[in-house]
Image (cartoon, rainbow, N blue to C red; front, side, top):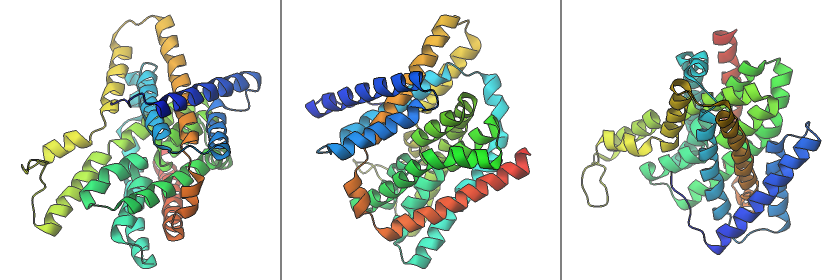
Length: 339
């Protein structure tokens, strides 16, 4: 995990995040029905709309770092027994979801006249892990900055909608904690929104959703390697690094593997095998909670309403159609494999 440098804009962003986190946590303590996760995003969005920052980059960087740290802290509250409760069976839900997202984006995008790279980026963001998947795929397909921006904006729009839609949808479908956690982890695009929606439903659902999302994020490696292979075949050229040396598929795999997942698994290993005192585990649990709230405050601050208005309508429609198919696929897979 890398950390952003502390420029003046970063200090200002950190101050806003800390204030919003404290406010959200305090309000939740007074009115438990108002979840701190949702409050943090809403307060961040309100502040960003009231006083738009010169750049949303610091908020995006900081929120991404905090989210990864929070997930590692969350690992100390888990164990192999809890991971086994989710199990490899979860891929019976995740693989159809990823396949439907990628294929629907490709063929619907072609039907709508959207460029193949733009459609692919929207599909990647919908299929796996939002902006991270888009960022991983963009250099492989040599996407333009505008294509990346439109895809990320489209995915963010539906991530925000998921925060409010999924708890209601889960209640309407009659899901329990584990089923909803599986549903949120499989069908919501970005990790931050998975965490927020999951914990808004219940703590148990939030934990399950996070585990499922980690399993889904791992699929970024085989999918991106598939893109690399397709790129080799299409161009009949070897992928090279900065010095022009050939880059092997193994090297690509190591570059694509999210390092924070390795730290998360180490935290689970420590929690499972070491006799950690209760007070320490409780401290990690609180740190995970506060760090997640802070990360979501950063997500809210990173909302650029101007960019949302500039995003192409076709890209937004494609993202919505693809995401709707993902939601249906996830719910059907849960019904067939977990009922």
